[in-house]
Image 1 (cartoon, rainbow, N blue to C red):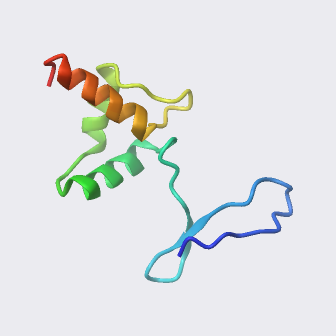
Image 2: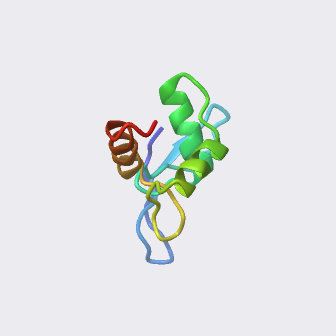
Length: 90
């Protein structure tokens, strides 16, 4: 798990991969740039409850910050949630 591939023939950066139970490799998630689907999955696992893509889309429409490509930075999103909560806008 978390092994690093090297020798990228395209000259790009090395990619960290993760291995699931089937042995298939998948790219590691970047908490600074998660799709809403990946963010919902990560947040649901951390919360022990369901966080849906629709919930995240509603937050984005309410002003939650996103990256230029539409991905979510979990640190920025958490800060936005904290600010929203401290303003009394749950």
